[in-house]
Structures are given as structure tokens and as C-alpha cells.
Amino acid sequence: MSLVGLIGGVSPEATKIYYELLNAHARTRHGGQHSARCVFFMLDYGVMIGHYHDENWEAFKAEVVKGAEALKAAGAEAIAITSGTTHVAADAVAEATGLPVIHMLDSLSEAMMACGVASPLLLGTPWVMSGDFFAPALAQRFPGTPIIPSTEDRDMVGRLIFEELVEGVVRDASRDELTAMIARYADQGADGVILGCTELCMILSDGDGPLPVFSTTHIHAEAVNAWMTGKGRA
Image (cartoon, rainbow, N blue to C red; front, side, top):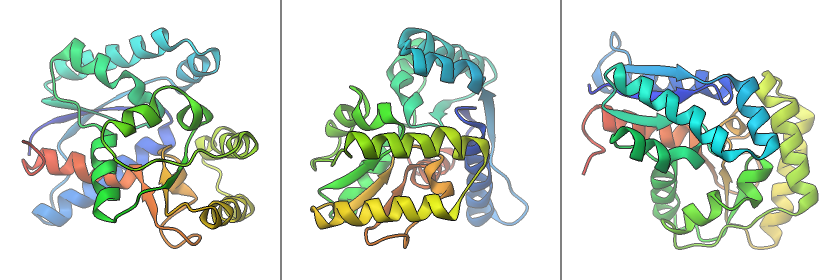
């Protein structure tokens, strides 16, 4: 397996899931005694969330680039970022390191197109849902049109992410709130759900609600594993 460097810590809860998934994929592909060949650089969530709330994206990107450069120095042959919001730094990472970036939106787009989804509901941090990065970057890869939740619904999803999931808290009442919201958008024409925050897979999965769920965490981890084993390269 090739050595992949992963940028984690935004938040640590999602990064743990990536590591579990990568090892599960390695066992499946290579046998029960194998594990994923990867190296992590963990960003400080407290620092990163401060930059997020201040909308200081230059400082945010600079932290991610420093992590990527450290991974390159450690021998990483490609970089993956274990956070939807943090993909805002993907292009800067590629430019600074010269390494391929295993981009979350590439594998997400492929998965949705394979299922014939055209109008997925986009869930994530408020900035992922309404900012000027995620949806436009997705549009470069995906021919459909994501549905953006209302301001009230974006606030609710953001509250669940920042006040519960990143703290490792998963509440049934919050899942019920999310699935009820998804049902409303299904009635308005949504035909899938993008979990654009990698913590959202902690509380939602396929079968929760009336629409197919596309977990960026699971889809991206599979793409990272494919790259490690040489199956995901051009």
C-alpha cells in the first residue's frame, strides 16, 4: 500500500471514524492482519474553529498547509483532508506540496451520479451549506443542483454539529429533528442527502428518513483506501 497523509482534527471525532474505516477497508482488501498504511497530522480544533467563526480563511488555510507540508516531510505520497469545511484549503495544499489531493468532492460526485441523484439536500456546517466554496466546487464536478436548507434549518444543523457531534454527543431527539427536516425537503423535490460535514455520519445514515444518504466520511474513506492500493489513480 502507498503511504497517504491525512489531515485531521477538525474535529477529532470525525478523524477517529476515518481511521476505523481505513483499517476496516485494509482488512477487507488484504486480510485480517493488515491495517491502513497512513500518517496523520492532527490540527488543533480549538484553533481552527476560532478561525472558522472569525471567517479568517487565510489563517485557516495556512494551518492546513503547514499540516500538509509536515505530512510530505514524513513521506506521504498523497494528501487527504478528513473534513468537508477544511477542503477549502485543498487547492492550497496541492500547490504548496506538489502532491495529489484525494478530494472528497470527486468521490462524492461519482457516488451521486452513479445513483442518478440530481437534487440532493446539502447538510454541513453553516458555511458549507451557504458559503462560497462547497457548492461551487461541487458544481464543477456534479451536474445536479444541490438544495440549500433555509436559514433556520442551517442554524439547527450547525447547532447540532458544533454543540453536540464535535463533543461526541449523539442524541436521538436530534436525529428525529434532522429526519423530520429531511422529510420536508423530500416533499419539495430533494432526492438525496449530502452529509457535507464528516461528523454527520455519527447521527445519520442510509435508512434514516425517506432519502438516500451520501456520507462524505464513508465515501471519501473508500476513495482514500482505493488510492492506497493503487485502484484510485488515473
